[in-house]
Amino acid sequence: MSGENSNPIRTLPAGLIAQLNSGVTVITPNERAARRVRRLYDQYQQQQGVAVWASAKAMSLASWLKRTWNDAVTEGRIVSPVLISKEHSFALWEQIIRTSPASQDILNISGTAEMAQSAYELMLLYQVPGKGLSPLDTSESRAFHQWSTQYQKRLDKEKWVDESALLPSISNALTEKSLSAPAAFCLYAMEDLRPVEMSLMEALRVSGSAITEFAAPMVESSPRKLQCVDVEQEIEYAAQCARKRLIEDPTTRIGVIVPQLPGLRQKI
Image (cartoon, rainbow, N blue to C red; front, top):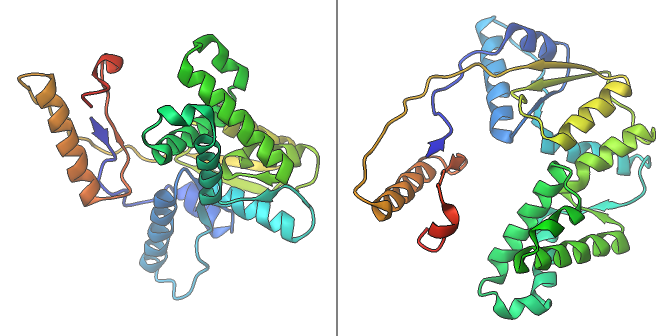
C-alpha cells in the first residue's frame, strides 16, 4: 500500500519563484499542491524581508479550467454550453441509472452512480471512445455504455458541459480562437500528464503560450514490509492502515495493489 509522503517540501525552485515574481500563473495537479506553493512563496518573501507582495498565482488545473471557462462565458466569448457542477453531474448519473432496466439488480444506486461518473471521467482523460468498451462484452460494460450514452445525450440536449469535459472543450475553444491563450503558463509537479491534458498543453503552445515546467523535488520515503499469516489478515491490515492515514489527513491519496483482484473482490 502506498500513500502521499508527509515529508514537507520546504523550498521552491528558483526558476519557479522567478515565474511567480513575474505574475505568471502556476498550475499544479491539485489544490493541496497549490496551497503549498502559495505558502512557500509567502515564506520566501518573508525571508527576503519584503513587507508587501502580491499573492502567488498558483492553482490546480481543475480550478484554472473552471475559472477560464466561466470568465469566457461572463465576457461573452463562449455562449454555451453552460458548466454544471460535479454535484449536478452526479445527480444526473444517479437519475439515469435509477430509471434504467439494470437498476433492479443494483443494491446501491448512489455508489454505482459514483463509480460510473468516475469511469466516464477517466475515459475522457485517456481519450477512450465509447466503442472502446465493445470488446469487453460484459453486462457491466453494456450497462455503462448505455448510461454514458444517455448522459452525453442529456448534456447535449440541455447545452451543458460537466467539469470532466472542460479539458477537451477548452482545447477546442483555443483551436477555434474562441479563447485567447495566456502569454505564459507554468506547470509545477505535473510530470504525468494524461492524453487529454497533453492535448491542452499542445493547444496552448500552438496558440502562443510559453509553457515552463518544473518538477517537484523528490522526498524520502520509508517503505516497510509486514508478513501476514493469510490473505484475510493482509486485507484487514491494509484497511486499518488506510483508515489511519485518512483520519490523519482526509486529503491523502492511497493506493492498494491487489494481485488477483477478481477472485478477492468480494472479500475486500
